[in-house]
Image 1 (cartoon, one colour):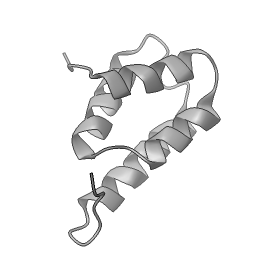
Image 2: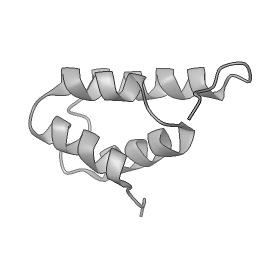
Image 3: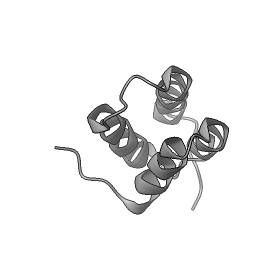
Image 4: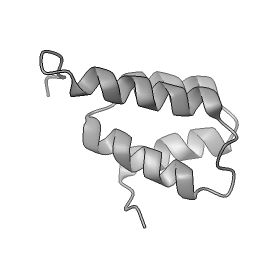
Length: 75
C-alpha cells in the first residue's frame, strides 16, 4: 500500500472535488519525483481510479521531465 504525504493528499482532494485543472497545475510544480510517485500510487488505490486519464498522463509526463539529469527543481 502506498504511503501518502501531505502534497499528494491535497492533490487527491482536488481531484475528488472535481477540479482536475487545479490538480494538473499542482502536478506541473510538484516538489519532486518521490511526491509524484506517491500521488501515482494513491491514484491507483483511489476508488475512482481511471476517472482522470489526463491527470495520469500529466503525472507520467512530469515524472519523465523530473527524471532527466539536467532538469531539477531548486528548493
